[in-house]
Length: 268
DNA sequence: CTGGATTCCTGCTTGC
DNA sequence: TGCAAGCAGGAATCCA
Image (cartoon, rainbow, N blue to C red):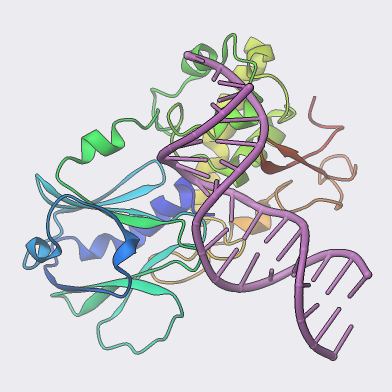
């Protein structure tokens, strides 16, 4: 699932396309455009001024009021190819042809992802919560949003309006590293646990970015290559395997409708 | 307001 | 071995 480290990696691997001009956009599926504030034609001959990321969203800035926002859902990919490449992927829904000889390909079999053409990106992205890799995300903030809350801490970590960018993989991995069970009520965390969880989230996201993200199944970077953080996963996808710390069998249970992996020995 | 369930979708995995 | 059902999940939406 493309989460913060994966989108950050895509952003970094596509950086060289900043400044390139859009020649044309080829749409194979109209409905992959989830919102269209202006006609597609208005993007023609506009340069990509900036490539940015907010939470799990990739943001291509063309004008002050012409923005392309890409969301990869769970099976989406967004990568560059040579314009002339005939590489055939099965579920390519859109291709953005650039003046630098490249094209940016959006593919997404499960179609949970989509493309947003927005006049005002702040209105769309503004609802997102704190970026976990900024100073703003600290124990005081994590404490503030968890107090009095009965919701499972894991479900809270997945709420994009509170913290933006954590998905199922990094929620499970952060909670393992912090030694906290995912089904604990958010409000029950002690000050020490809040500190530990805050640090674990930052650490695991940074390590994953260093490894170019986690390719569990679908994810690829901006060059259509796999990441390598899956080698360092301690709990996600490891149900019935041994805990790397204590040897206990990793347990999987549904929490908030999401498959959740944890070690009953190491996480309390 | 909170928190849980439901919905969308395809492809891989499971079970008979 | 083959096929159908089950499962996976990000985020919007609905409901109690």
